[in-house]
Image 1 (cartoon, rainbow, N blue to C red):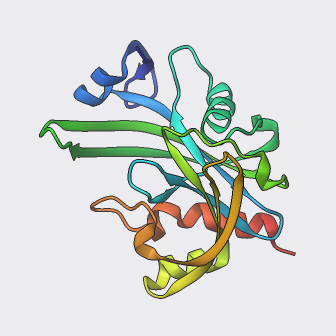
Image 2 (cartoon, rainbow, N blue to C red):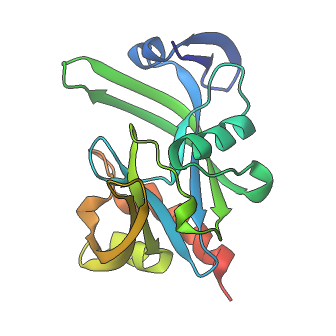
Length: 208
């Protein structure tokens, strides 16, 4: 059973609860969002197993007694099989996340989180990725400027490189165009607000 530290809205530690209760009762907790980018300004989104949409490179809850730094390293290793720590990264913002979502069984998931956003330079080989088969189908790499323009205009398509694992367990690359509706955007969200600041920070970090 997974336990999470819980807090009041001001960030004072209150104790811990199971993940199910945290989301049932809307208790404040912590998460991390980790974004890998290349030196030429590409951003890596993971392809989610549950819905096929493009989301953060790696992200998740900060567990009970775990630091933000430990969660950062664990989530990247668990979801895409790479080893990083926060000395490699830059924290760009702390986002207050508040959302209620009706699940398929009719119950309401209440999400109340303070999420630490990191950007991380990546210069490895795509064969290094080892995707969690329960969560991640692969990685899609897009140019940050192209993605930002797509989210601003909400029309058109952009070039992308997809890294997925074949039936023999080998990572393979393919190229195609991707559209706005392939990026994970929930009801009452928009892509620019959700991803724009990350993209702008990557553009700034990689400008000549």
